[in-house]
Length: 172
Image (cartoon, rainbow, N blue to C red; front, side, top):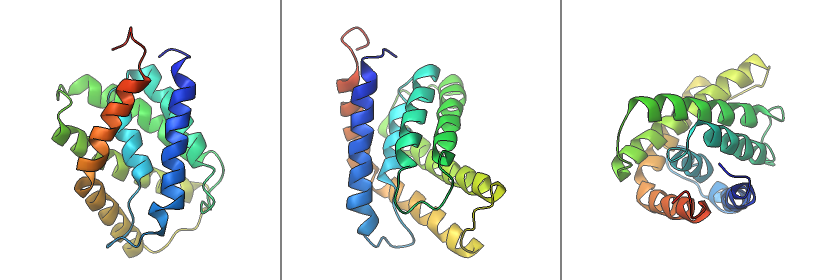
């Protein structure tokens, strides 16, 4: 990943973060919420190599730590998304040759968001953050996965186009 892509990636993720915090968090989704930010992140890093995925995970996590509703220590989302960027780039890209079909990207995105939320929960519990009951957490995980799957025809093509725009002419 070239250094010229970092400002564009930062701007794209900051824009998605603002949309998430300003609009999507205000919608009362059935069975929990929907995180466009996480879905956008995982649909993006599927296309990246290991170094770029970790860098993007750090940038996305850093931005996510500025959420006004977050009651976890600063840096927890940075840690979680950097680790998930590494895991996705090494395990998913290394073991699967899925050809970037929309269905495979959707399934990987749903799995990635669910695993990242569980990792955030586990790390938060280790750090002493108090969370809701197990039933509420399970309902939110199920709802987030459901909405990530249902709304994938909207964000997967948009992510693919924005990813191509961020690439340099040599990388295309």
